[in-house]
Amino acid sequence: MNKMLAVARWEFIEKVKTKAFIIGLFMTPLIMSVFMVLPGLLSKSEKETTKKIGVIDETRMLSSLINAKLHEKYKLSSGIPTYELYEITDENRETDHLKIIATAQLISGQIEGYFVIPMSVMDSGKVEYRAENVGNVRDQNRFSNVLKDIIIEQRAKKAGYNPAVIKKLITEVDIKTIKVSQKGDESESGFMETFFSGYIFIMMLMFLVMSSGQMLIRSVVEEKSNRIIEVLVSSCSAKELMSGKIIGLTLLGLTTIAFWVIILIGVNFATEKPFVTVDNVMVLLLYFILGYFMYVAIFITAGSTVSTEQEAQQMTGYITILLVLPIALAVPVMMNPDSTLVKVLSQIPLLTPTMMALRFSVRVPDLWEIILSLVTLSGTIAGLMWVAAKVFRIGILITGKRPNIKEIVGWLRNE
Image 1 (cartoon, rainbow, N blue to C red):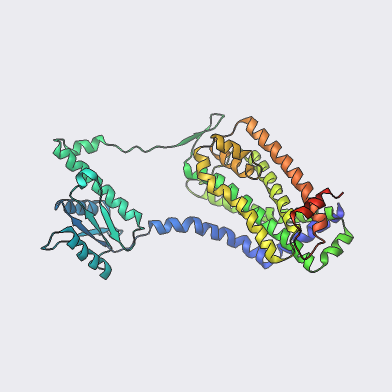
Image 2: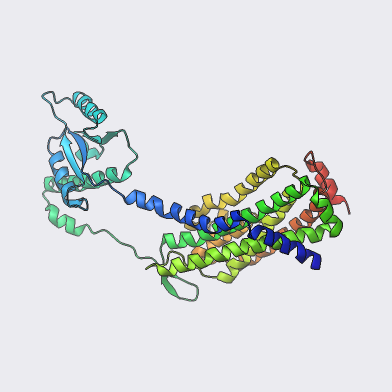
C-alpha cells in the first residue's frame, strides 16, 4: 500500500505543477464558454446598415406589400429598416431578362440578393432566392413569413373574408414546459436545460477519461523509452505501479473537474434562469465513477502495448471515437428515451454511463434497467481490470514492435 501511494503521490505532484496543467485548468472552461456563447452572439448580430435586396415580381403587386411589412416588423437599433426591397424592372418585363439585370447588380454589390416571385405564388407559395451567400437562413425565413402573411390576407380577401378578423382568430401557441418528477415535484424546464444536463455529464466524463488516459499512456511510453520502467518494477510490483498511476492521475483529473464544477455552479445560479438542472445526483455520480474506471482499464491495456508517442496518439484516437459517439446520439436519445433501441444501447457497457445519464436527464429509467446496467458495467470493469493487469505486467517491459492479438492472448493465459 505504501509503494502504491508513493507512486500515486509522485504522479499527482509531478503533473499538477506543470505549466500545461495550470494553463489548461483556466483555459479549457474559457474555450468551452467561447464555443457555447460565440455562435449565439454571431447568429444574433446584424449589420447596422439597411440590407438592399432585389425582387422580380411577376405579380406586379406583392413587392410593395412585402416591403411595407418588412419596414413595419424589422428595424435596426438605430430605428431604420433592416431591409429595403428594390423591384428589378425594365421595359422588357420577361423574367429571364430581369434575372440577367438582377445578377449583374448582385455581382457589382448593389444588392445582396434577389427574390423571384412567380405568378403562381398565390397557389404554390414557392419563390426563388439567388445570392452569393444563401446560408443566411434568418433573412430568408423573415421574407418567407412576411410573404406567407400576405398570401393568407390576399386569399382571405378573395374568398370574401375580413383578413383582420382571421388574423385575430389565428393565435400562435406558446408551450411552457414543466418537468414533473416521480415524487410529484414540478419545475420549469425546457429542452436546453435537459440537453445541457446530459451534455455536461458526457463532456466531464470525456475530459476526465481523455486527460487521465492520455497522461497514463504518455507516462508509460516515456518510462519505457527512458528505461525507467525497469527501475520502477524492481522497486514495486506491476500491480502496485498500475494502481498508483491510476490513483494519482484520477486525483489529478478530479481536481480539475472539481474546479470546473465550482465555476459551473457559480455561473448556473448567477444567471436569471439556471441552464442546467441536475436530479438523481448520487446515481449519476455512480455511473460517472464506473464509466471512468472502465475507460481507464481500456487505456491501461492499450497503453501497455505501445512503445512510441505516435502509436500512443493513434490508440488514443480510436478510444476517443467511443467517447464521442454518445454526443452524436444525444438529441435522438432525449427525444425517445424509452425506445427499444435506446434501452438496448443502454445495456452495452461502453455506452452505458453516457446513455443512462442522458436518459436520467429526461426520465428515470425502470428500476430493472438501472440494476441490470450497473451489474453489467461492474462485471465489465472487473474483467477489463483483470485484462489490464495481465497486459500491463508484461507489456511495460516490451519495447520495439507492437505485440499482436495472438501474443496478447498468450499474456492473458500466463499465470
